[in-house]
Length: 140
Image 1 (cartoon, rainbow, N blue to C red):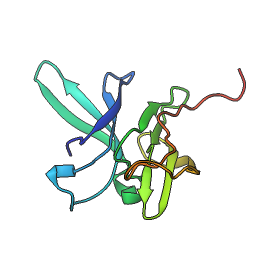
Image 2 (cartoon, one colour; image 1 turned 45 degrees about the horizontal axis):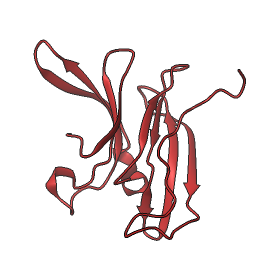
Image 3 (cartoon, rainbow, N blue to C red; image 1 turned 135 degrees about the vertical axis):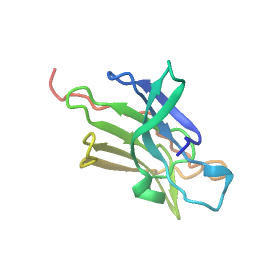
Image 4 (cartoon, rainbow, N blue to C red; image 1 turned 180 degrees about the horizontal axis):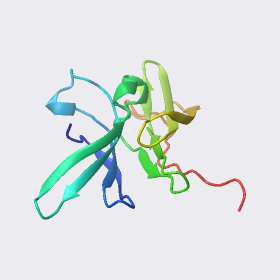
């Protein structure tokens, strides 16, 4: 699956590339599957090939679809992945999510929904925005 509006690219410790795929107009269509995802690619520079090796979010569908902004992150303490749809417009609901899943088996570790209070945005964009997220330790 090709990324459609990728954000927050990072190189993982294993050398792979990890990105947030917004998924807007996926496959040049506004009527197809609507989802965002975090996705990991293995790049072989010698052979000039790219292989998708992991993804999370497609199975969540529209509840985590964010057409702009958003973030992914690697949790070095345990190799988990953060998936953060920054602006989700799902019917009349507008929110962001911060989701942590285990790697590679995608078991849910943490999920928070941040409901927007300022809905006086422009067009389809709410007034509130969430751009990035990080998992921080409570104690130094």
